[in-house]
Image 1 (cartoon, one colour):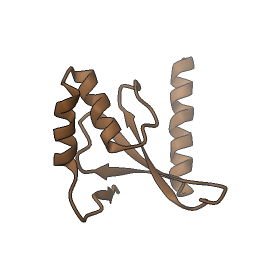
Image 2 (cartoon, one colour):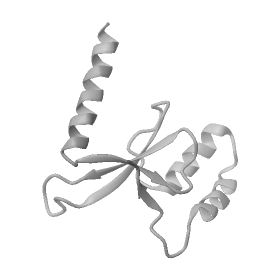
Image 3 (cartoon, one colour):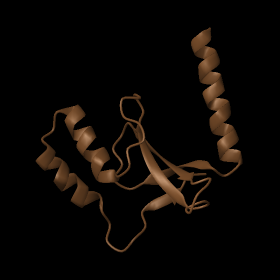
Amino acid sequence: AARAARVAKVDADKKHKAERGEESEVAVAGLPVGWRAVRKKYLSGKRAGRCYTRYFSLDGKHVNVETLPQVLKLDAGDRGVEVSNAAQMIRAAKLPGRDHRVQVA
């Protein structure tokens, strides 16, 4: 029962942040299966109103990962793939001259 209450509170908090425009899920080209990307806004300071992206593994093992190359390296390590192969995946995921983040409705 306590876990269900925590999950409900987290879901309500996510919904509240999304409604205020502070946080939204985004689709990112090259993001491995089992990961999600969240676009957030700085709420104070010199960067107030600007957006940044953080990545989270769905299993909860990795949270607040800052870059896609870091995500690919962590994912490769979790799957037992050599990190040198992850570098190839990083190059394949990059699309030159395009912002490959797309808003998910």
